[in-house]
Image 1 (cartoon, rainbow, N blue to C red):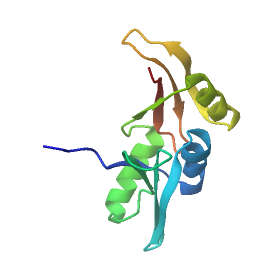
Image 2 (image 1 turned 90 degrees about the vertical axis):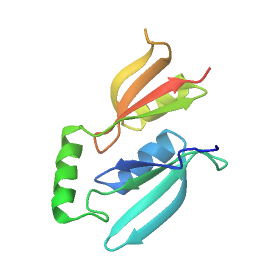
Image 3 (image 1 turned 45 degrees about the horizontal axis):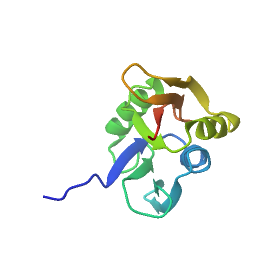
Length: 134
């Protein structure tokens, strides 16, 4: 059976700020940018196509007001699931994100569980870990 993960949701409170972090900082490319019902969702993926795509959306996009409020509260607390990316050059990616003003949680370091990685918060407060490929 062939199966793969196609989309990974990322809830953000400012789609444009999130695009700057994920596209300009991490190097993902915008694949789709759609306005719908007063909200907007944007998909991003690795350059060249294929693979899993991130779907950036606001807490209220396609949700009831009650669910949007609950999701916004979790986002504000930094309590949503984190994402892990893998890059060929961890140090260059780290410096590009830091230079762009991203909040550093952990500088590049060898981790006892295996990878060399670092961590940031995206503009919405989501934790993003980045591993060195290899």
